[in-house]
Length: 240
Image (cartoon, rainbow, N blue to C red; front, side):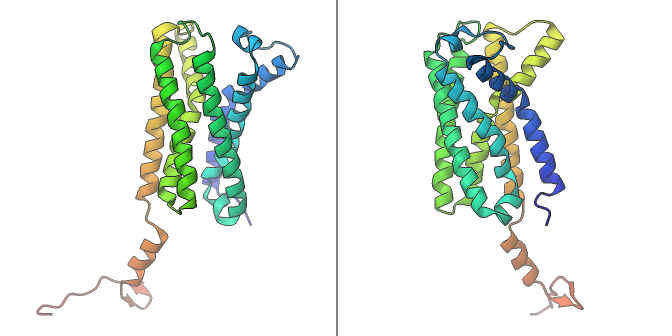
């Protein structure tokens, strides 16, 4: 039996590729912190207090990479136990990711060129929203409210993937303008990345909600008369 469909392989490849830049850069940072070579530019805040950064990077890796499997219908159709176990791990990693992000946003001494008031506010709001969405997702799945469950988890995943979109926008900015965005420009670019993710998440949720449910399709099929195995529209007789 083939576990994944072609469409699901496409989803995995896209999400893995999308996550590559921040995940790979994060792993290089951990390598540097553990005594390895300094491959990426040094960050004095991380050097002074590396623990929150390490926790943030590892939780982001689990949330983004293992979280991608939670969107594959074949997983929870054929291996529901694995889906539940992996979902619990991903949800825990997502909450740790959000909490560590909030800690770094508030306590790391970031210069205004890297984080102004706008970006600080956006990070606090979205980090909190991510925790709320994951909490709703965990609560609703226990109550079998699956539509609200997957909607909440998709929104949380979109927020957690903010760094991936920010990396792409930042690279495009550097390539086109030959300089890194700083100050308010950087705040706006980072915020725009989250807005893009949220818009895509809402589009995905809407498309999923528009799909006919299996029971609804079955009821529609049963309610129609058949002639020689072919579905036909019911006939309305005058005067009936």
